Image (cartoon, rainbow, N blue to C red):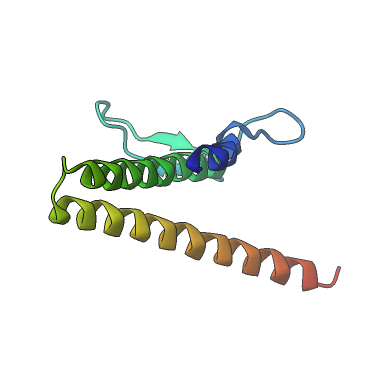
Length: 111
């Protein structure tokens, strides 16, 4: 069921129409785990990473729920996993709503 959502992860592979990458002034800078210099990522890469994390969270919740049905997980683990997945889903929906709102505002601008 959740595997169908993985196609959304293709956002991380988006490039600009001309094939150039985003410059440092337009890219989101995030600190890297092991390096001292910040690593810049494009907005599409950040969205792709967030989407992948949300999908992983939902799959984990689904797996823990199945373990509970088999009697291998307790209720607390199921609730924690489902709440984490719900929070990820709510975050994804909020970001989607903001992107749609921004698009509609841009579409209403007069040239």
